[in-house]
Amino acid sequence: MSTRPHATVPNATVLHELLDAPTASTTDPAAPAVTCGNLTLSRAELVRASHRCARELRARGLRRGDRLVVTSDGGPLLVPLLFGASRLGVVFSVLHEQVRGDVLRHVLADCEPALAIAASPATRDAVREAGVVVAAPEDLNVVRDAVRDAVAGQEPATDATDEAGRAEDDGVDGGPLPVDPVCLIYTSGTTAMPKAVVSTHQQMMFAVHAIAERLAYRADDVVYCPLPLSFDYGLYQVFLSALAGSHVWLGSATESGPALLANLVRSRATVLPAVPPVSAALLRLLRRRGGERPQLRLLTNTGAALPADIPTGLREVLPGLRVQLMFGLTECKRLTIAEPDEDLIRPGSCGLPLTGTEVFVVNEEGERLPAGEVGEITVRGPNVMAGYWRRPELTASRFPRRDGLFPELRTGDYGWTDEAGRLYFAGRRDDIYKQDGFRVSAIEVEAAARRLPDVSTAAVLTPDGSRPEAVLVVTGTADPATVLPRLREHLEDYKVPRVCHAVDALPVNANGKTAKSVLAGQLAEAVRD
Image (tube, rainbow, N blue to C red; front, side, top):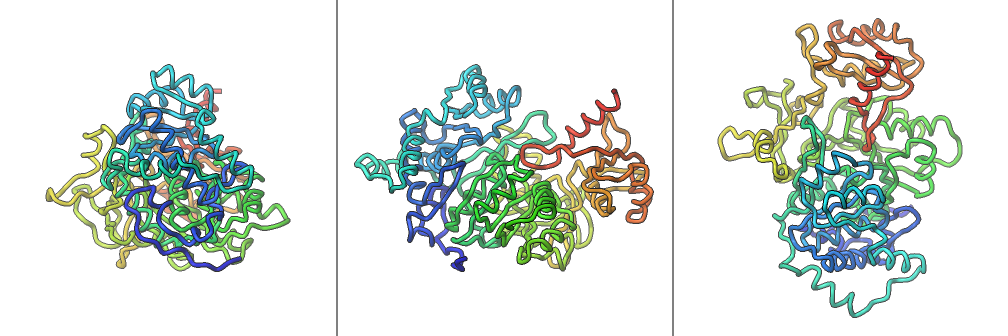
């Protein structure tokens, strides 16, 4: 394998400059940039396709500030379409292909897109019913052009329209400014319907460069992304790869079976951005199956805490693999990133804040707490969102200002910092609950349960209006009646739930995270039966 270092490039100030700025890969315009399905686009093809997408959107009447909704099953069009939208100053929002019904209608009414692009006929019908102009990916000329050129195995022909259009694409309506919005990311939370996090070019580019500084993707990396681009962790793999000149290979969030291992080998992946269920699935596959092993050099994790036994097992079966743990949320992309393999020397650490940012914890009065004390995780810096789209009250609630000068994003998550400023995660707002008058972290209870040899995975359903006490749910061969007594060997008595159930598998959502609301519904249904 080549040992070329990651590229050093000027900082991009707007999204599409990630493609246009020089990188190590641009010395070979035929170097692969993105693979989706059976189609691979070189860097040159991706740049050209993004200009064609910009022209297509402009021809359909979109201008700076308009919104574009596209579903994550957009195929080879999806990546060039996002960069093309950036060239016009169009604000894009990627929705998971499974978004439908009331949630889809809510998003369409909320962001009022000028155009939606969806592969599913059913989704297109629903969009039309909402009064929004909609197109299928194959309706756009750029798809036919890209497929034709790539299948022919030749550099796309240069024509006068392409050359004349490039300057116009980047200069139409004056082009986007760094302070302009580029993306709306819809995220669930405590509200009944998803709300949209507004990311400006400036905020997004700061996050991309700050994350790249820590992860150090290289021009010879193949980044295999099984996460949907509707999930910001997946979306940023496209941008980090463009910055480094890496080859991003778009997989599928449903790849938890043999297809995951097969595609890692087939793509010759060197980097895998994963959430815990994906990492756990990979470890099971590697332990059960022989044959060729993937060439992974780096696995990154965010979205949820990674149980310690998973990186330990992966390092055993993939010698040379390094694991890099991170902590983030959509509202600020990434808060902290640990050094590679830092979990081996500082278990539980999520690492130091991104360069140019500040992360600390506060009590209920908003006062900063000293090292070692648990409080609400708070962040300041250019990585913080502009706010929630059309939700001024919700935005204000997440940005309390003690002195009226310095906005501080309250994350709703809890943790503590050490003397050096490294963050340790205790649990999300919904993961912290009271039991017998004591504060308990569901994360801690789940980790203790997974240490039992006959427990594969575990989830704690915290108390709510329908559930007066915490409930532990486990998978594996363990008898639920024996789990709770054995937990007392690992936890204080007051932290041990009084109820335990066993299920065949924990449900996961579209982003690969444990879907606790679905699990709660399944258990309630089982009780009624």
